[in-house]
Image (cartoon, rainbow, N blue to C red; front, side, top):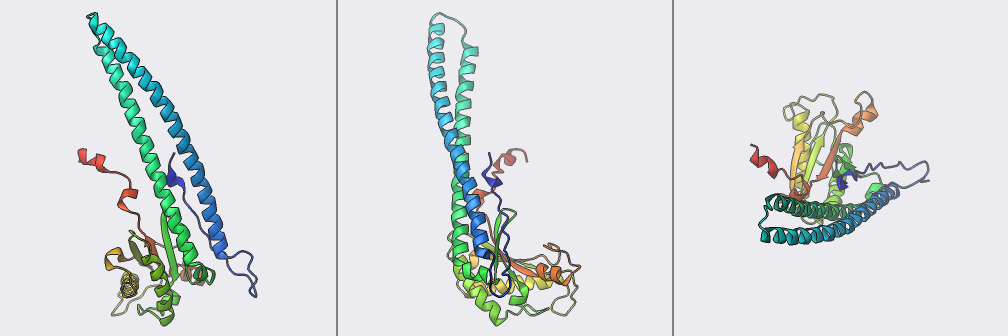
Length: 276
């Protein structure tokens, strides 16, 4: 059982004609959240059942260990060789200890998923009006919570200077994200595949990185602690759409603010220290 299988695909629905909304973007996100929450509840039920099974197994093994200990004592008193029986006794004890460790790890992961879901729900509620207005998009991508913004709202073409409208949006987003405790963020800049070659931006690498850096600097000015945020640029090399159409290129030009996982949410690689 792996709680990390609870991956969300969050798709924003467009507002249709003359103000008539089939389903608001926020409501769709909320439904996805509720579905994930239901899956987590199922997961919690399975963990609880495992806990019960382990307790029953533990009681049975404890009884078995007591009986083995009693038998070992009697055989030793009779002068019999009990080394093999002692080995089997130790094996039973090791199995029980391993099962308890595995359950503790499952419960730790469950608690992490609950905390992540609570964080995501809070983000949705606070960004609701901006999501419905199409100013930002919130999604789960590759297990990461991401706030995405179209660069057209933030920058003029070929520029890394924030527009007034972009500053207003970033200010609101910063207020929400800075309030999420004990989390760090990475601002990622992305472009389409149209080449740029200016004195300031010799390629899309410099443009994407420059834009991400400007976003980071402004968010720090708006109250984001500098030790909790960083910038990176990916140029045109992580597209979300094809670049053959105007619409596709527009989707690829984006700024994404990624909520990074904490170290205790990453796989434990300490076992590799013994191998390398």
